[in-house]
Length: 255
Image (cartoon, rainbow, N blue to C red):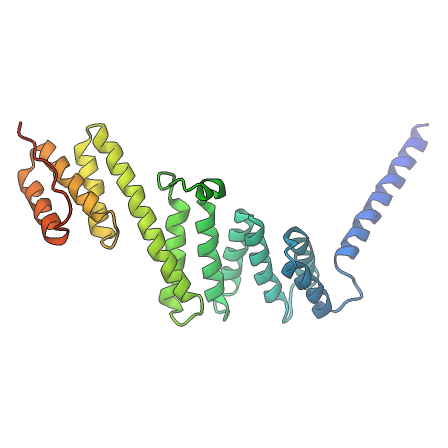
């Protein structure tokens, strides 16, 4: 009985292996050329069936790891992962592509996609839809997105993606300034006036074009005033009055 049972297990395992091999053959027809197989995968990708397209492109990458179409398959995988919302796999594919193809003519696109993907990593579709400001959350991916777009615009200034990358940098800087302002306000409300002043000063120094600069200067004035640092307070007041004459001047501590 044990011998029969062992034979049944072996037959079952063999059938399972055959089924697995057949499944791989279905993904990429072994009788197809690389170009024909790619055309099928691209058609699926263009139709928006991203999960299926990823399966086909990965199978193609395994079957045709070299040749003129291999790099295009990798680029399409990057797009498919991004479109499907798989941030982790998308970034891994991007970093691998950059590492293996440091002189590829489409690197501007790859850096653009890395910026988009890192930007997407810090977004919440539900909160964005209802207009909830999420500048208070961790900004690591957003900061990395800024660096990605910075590489794009500085290294490839003539790229067709450069203008959008520049616009996204402006948006990200404003978002980071809001984040710093929220942190500064947090410190101020808890009486940590030096920490609040330093955060506000950081906004003034590094986000000069932000709409948060007048608010940051106001917070610097109140924080320095609370600390008794009259020289720094008066300097901040002078900057606020000179650059933002319409802004409200905070009341001075009379104690």
